[in-house]
Length: 344
Image 1 (cartoon, helix red, strand yellow):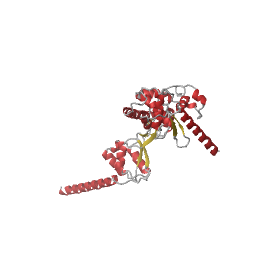
Image 2 (tube, rainbow, N blue to C red):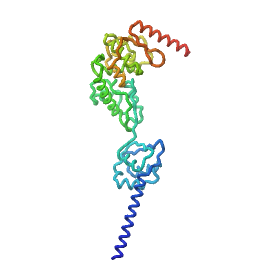
Image 3 (spheres, rainbow, N blue to C red):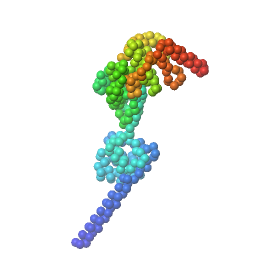
Image 4 (cartoon, rainbow, N blue to C red):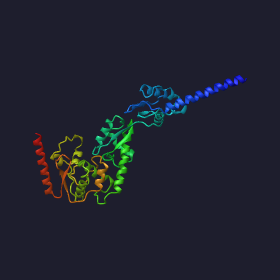
């Protein structure tokens, strides 16, 4: 009997020792830095993948040499049943432990999409559909439905989505991204409206968006936005027509060929600010926050006109009188003729 007890004790000691050694091996393995190159490793876990399939894929990609210990730990800890499908990037310095944490928390790779200041709704939807990681789910005909879902009071999409860079996981839909951009625009517009100059010539936040979109299309220069907004503000206050080319071009639509003619300026549309007073009925582009701020905080002064300088830096000449403006236009045209002559 005593011999049996001794034998069992020895077996138990060996078993405990083996377990301790095994646990130490697993512990060391889980803390070991993986063989990940500097630019990382792209790794996709498909929907319905078993953990065994995932671990084999890690071996195949050379991230780990042997997946036995990883599978043992994942089953023991319960992580094997909680991994999430997705598009991941395994970064340098990763360990099996951090890798499991990444897979179970769903810390997938994030992509970026930038809405550019001055885009119109056609530009925006085309860019979304050209983005590889974005899932297309709507067409131009779906704008009214989307705006209704978002709770927008406007029935036209122009100007409602804030130019910004958005981060998102693969297969995020165009609708989801647009919802983010709409919400952020509402937040920014509300902030700027609260802090506006009471003398700004707009009655509603939507009118502010409309004016901001014109400012956005007229200049990309930070030092000119409020000055140009000031010109438009004074023209509105004096009941002068805005006479701004970007609104005319927007009114022409997709068929605009890049050459704005005198006939175009005389052809009436709801957006032709040469033939109509006041602001156009909707924004004509997506204005950024800086343009919104400028529209709501126009620079003071007496200037009522501006024209491009033709210097190639996007700058403008500003004038208080028609005579000064005519002289600035003549100078611009002379500069253009000279540049064409030199180029020819």
